[in-house]
Amino acid sequence: MTEQLICEMIRYYSNDPKRIQHFMKVHDFSRTIGILEGLNDKQLFILETAAIVHDIGIKASEEKYGNCMGKYQELEGPPIARLMLTKLGYEVDVIERVCFLVGHHHTYTNIDKADYQILVEADFIVNLYEDAASMDAILNAYQKIFRTNTGREILKTMFGI
Picture: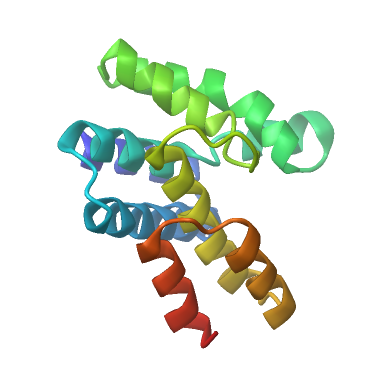
């Protein structure tokens, strides 16, 4: 199912290699952190699914609001994700959790479970690199966002902090 979803998202982001590259990297970091942090198979499946579709609301946000700010992604993403995951035959409980994660992946308070924490960390790892963030921004994220041992180690090693 994961590979089918990846192909569907590549089609969804047709002619937008930057967005395709982004979700693939977030997926890979999420999977790596999830495995090393000991998620069970179901948690890992939900995390990987959410990582693949986490930014699915960007296109609708840009069309509707003229930008893709996080709050708009969180608003527009879940209905689109729900439709795509339903079409692909995902189970209802998986769809519900994935839609929750899509609808909160730019909200950094009240992180309730490991899948949410890991998705946020993986997205930060990729965004900090893609946005050529300053060392101050990287250190701030390390101190305020990162909680998993694996995510913290990846960030330290990648950026030399």
